[in-house]
Length: 91
Image (cartoon, rainbow, N blue to C red; front, side):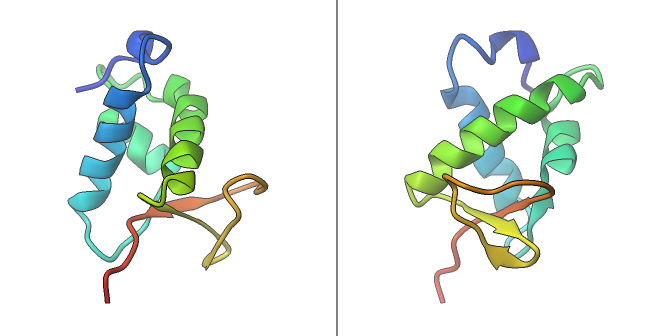
């Protein structure tokens, strides 16, 4: 699906891949490693962790996903440590 080599060329394919992966598990959150393993080509998912974080911050600032830290929404501009990603709820 996604090759880490194309991460520098354009973030758009990674953003689309993140949103599609999250769309397959509505109402749930996924960690960056879970997303990377699903998106990565040929099992080389470790190289995707930093690009996923960057794409997640951009998407969160755009209101297209939510970054969770310890089960609560986190400030996309200022979060550390383990985090999970989810789509915004439309309750």
